[in-house]
Length: 149
Image 1 (tube, helix red, strand yellow):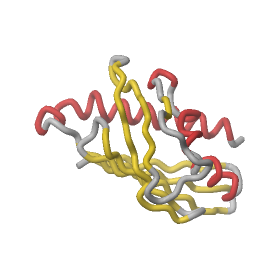
Image 2 (cartoon, rainbow, N blue to C red):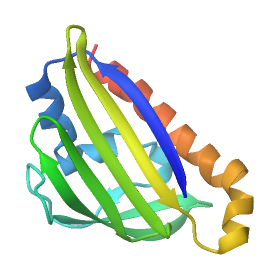
Image 3 (tube, helix red, strand yellow):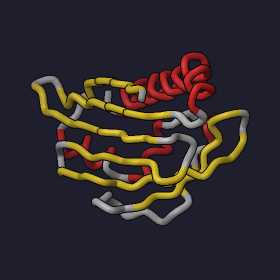
Image 4 (spheres, rainbow, N blue to C red):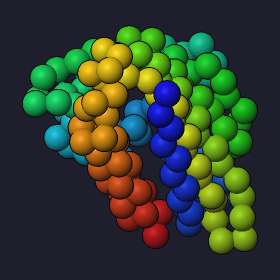
């Protein structure tokens, strides 16, 4: 299993930060355009435990792929967790944590994931999957920084 951890200071208050990140509709705003990210299911204004969300993404060579996540845990203004139910990973568990600081909201992402295809998945991880995830989260960091100046 692999893990990606990212921290970012979001220069806003907890209510504004939470409202933005807990709205499934906003995910496409912080995802690189080349991913072809498209929310396919109707989504409520705010997420809740048990919410299933279907997306269409094009993570590799422009090939469309179905991705379904379930919001498994929500503690308002503190954290939420999404887990892949259908998609490219053998396991995908993404924790989003929010903590108030004097300078804004410290947002921490912890993504634990496992690749399919055993040894082959492990072989492509460093130059394909890990690289792509770092690229996606770098884009997200930049966009969030610009949105919350």
